[in-house]
Length: 429
Ligand SMILES: Cc1ncc(COP(=O)(O)O)c(C=O)c1O
Image (cartoon, rainbow, N blue to C red; front, side):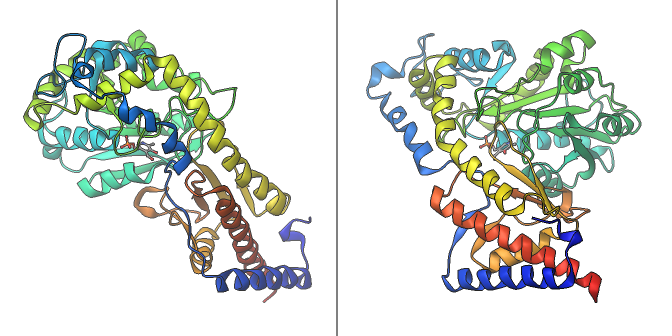
């Protein structure tokens, strides 16, 4: 297939008519397909059904320290749950807080706490320091950006590279402006590009000396064990790297089992230096008498140890890798060599990031919606929903059944070809 930019007016008209005609036929079928959110599919949820019955009588409810999980007690997590996460993530138990079900909730709370009360070793609450800012590697996770927007924190986009955020840009901003208080990071299998930060990038984060003494790196390791292949990406440990530079207080680390067990009924953790933990705990104690320990126990009894989780994640991969393959092989077949789209082939995580020819993303989003395929809105992967090149679309392949996914991607490719043909035809007007 020839690149679109080399096609004649007649050839482009033919492409346009073919795509338009096919889309009309799909539209008439009244489809309702959804590629918006990174949710596990039914078969993935079914993998963990047995977890619901691992606690079936009172004996199952006692922690190794004698605590009855059915009652109040223990704010920061059962010892065995801390151990499970410690083993899984390589973080010392004393740095782990086991919280409720949602790491996003923990991130939101962490920011509001900093706004209202400041952070350990900081001067004043963030909200008393005038306009504050966050660095937002982009494309990134829309819900991180939504937290900033909700709370009124100005967002400063920096580009992503195949090694992680552009660290020159991060250093320029973080080291020069004390009103910059943080940065969002999804260091492994980033949302949406599936990028894992290189060792050098992790080292640079550890070595960062921000202008603000109350700056924090929000290290959202949501996809730490979510490998799709037998050659998982390796992420260097940020806390170990930070020890060398004495910067461990700069790091707020988050993770959860949302996409290991049940989104909405998993277990979330936050990890931080001893100094940060000491500052945070009294605030947590005011928010709650304790989190859901029966669920914490359920996770421990079901998985037993980190190896149990790793084995379980292979079963997830067996279900979702074919879905990723459907998307990338269809893109290759339909769009390969046309010069109008590029995509990643992630080794893990939940998303495929699709970059179109500049100026096409919103048009393709609208065409897909009209044909019955719901996509994450164009622009969502950028702060304020503003993709400067209007080119990025995030594809979430896990939720639909394989046949629905295939149909949705076929339609998406038609939308892309139609939009690209329209764009190039304008050159002949
Ligand atoms: C990067 C990232 N962080 C956090 C979350 C949400 O995590 P949780 O369910 O623990 O709130 C998601 C969900 O898609 C995500 O992609």
